Image 1 (cartoon, rainbow, N blue to C red):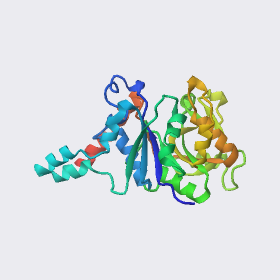
Image 2 (tube, rainbow, N blue to C red):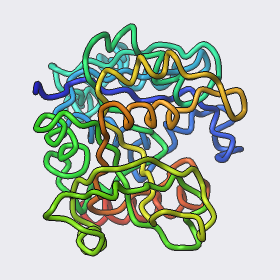
Image 3 (cartoon, rainbow, N blue to C red):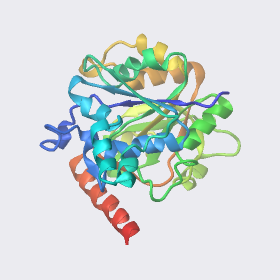
Image 4 (spheres, helix red, strand yellow):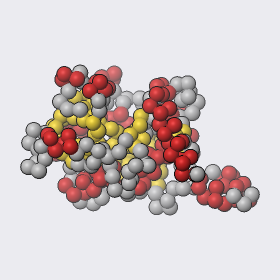
Length: 297
């Protein structure tokens, strides 16, 4: 199968968990060390081979689009002052990478946000990266691990992929939890899965349980925020009725995709940070800043 080169990043949310920081600055532009959080997410996508990134935004999120555009006036001023290296660092997107933005229009949930990208994605298969989730770029190879691995797996067998990671028992109720297929391949069983945490490995999934109690959780593998989808997901999203909170749930469309085409989960390598949660964001900021300061020494 042809390798995926398109990705969707939903950025329309107001980021209420990050108030007051996100009152006037989009949460995606809040810094992790010396770069905005979304910078790392886009770098991850590009390293994995993505060439066209679609930001699904909101009228008040134009600053995100501006971040990935060229500020000609600033560029000219920096070069006039002989700061060519600094100017070059601001225009860091590769020439063969395109960033587009389309508005979601109505706040109808993650599923609706992904569907809003359809006019640009067209008939292509695509990845989805949630910008709240930032994967550690210092301990993994973004050109081979996690999203890159998922794209290669999709190109090999055509199964949509969802990234998962092991979480502590006390945190199971916070996440969508994978229910693994009972008929795993001969080379893998439940013990293998437990042993293969922190490396990329792909397994069939039977479905997901949203924020279960620990006693009802089918596993401790939580959805991380990286997806690789067959284009078929758009048809399911278009026919998915609004449910909880009047929103179109991505998980409902995933369940439909599983039932007809099958979906795999990929265990994550390395660590991730929730940049949309204040406590986790502050921890991530300190970690990223320390890594960058160490590199400067």
